[in-house]
Image (cartoon, one colour):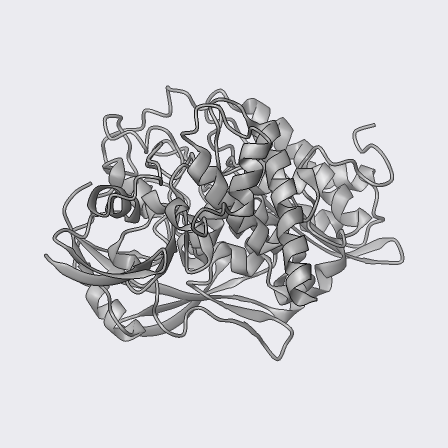
Length: 352
Length: 165
């Protein structure tokens, strides 16, 4: 790990001023940052510790039925918060399908949004990576790339965003509250992360020194509480990043889908909102034929970026299955294996 | 840069001078305070051997900067037993032969203590396995570990009921 200075500001405005100094990085839970620093992947000159800033650790219900989640709320506290698990159950299920209990006890909301890709070439300082070193090239393009992006990738970068939490947030129109030296602003989570294009080193809309202070879930997202699931395919049963995942949220009236929300994880450099699939589901009967059509719409633009064409088929199946599970109803309690694709679908098979 | 922090470790308050902010909680415990029960396995948050309890929560001490934990209460494997009386999780690990080489055991035990306190797993072996998935055992003693955690959970619950009565 490189040498660095450590500062612990007492207020948000002090933090924002401290982080405006070039070479500074915010430290919250540290679960991703320390790992990256130990590997020599990032080497900040100064850590601005925001892990106990006052006012950022609350989960506040809002008058519209929504909730404001402070940026340093820990993943575990959020997942088990009764307001979250009742109103936004897909958020709890996604959080509990990620990492391990120890990591969820330390990792924060803000850090989850800003976690870096798990691309092995990004993680290996001796490999060429445009994200780590702009202009260096991308070794993933000709390398081991079976887990890389199938949507929104570019010639410069085919990495994916690893978050589970961000997938239902994108589906549910979450909003990111940001504080900077110019004041406070809000950005839709869907617009918060950037696709790589020719500048894969730019991963979010944050300007240098800006701090994520909260994530807000709007009250309208509560309407999906009865039919909301997160489904995540992993290469082992637990404690692994998604190969592909999906958050499916439905509002069903008399067997007809009045409104649908769908987002995919593990497929792109950002959580991937599938609006065409949502449109295909609006007003149709809740059955597997329409789920298959929606999955086709969700993946119409998907293209392999290497040896990963299979991910498109897997994503298709995960979307169909997530929609079927959501239609069957949110379980009383997050299952023992959260987001597991091995759980049976009430009412039978979907691939028939 | 030098930093002064205070930690309460296994009930004892310690004033600590850090010459370098890079010191992790794990390295502080092992190298400075000679509490070597907490193990360094992967040092990257993947194996769980370094699990300790900080302010009531089980975390990976390898991914926590000591400076950032200023003021915290830390419980390590050394602080778990009450004198000669083992903690119910420690006793259950012995009773169920829940280890072979023993390297991962302090982390497994501290993680199990956290899991039981969190109270989400109940008596469901699937939930126990999922809740313990952040602790790897290269010897593959998982079956005994799951049995030990389930038994410890029962004895902690019974002790709680007796106290309440």
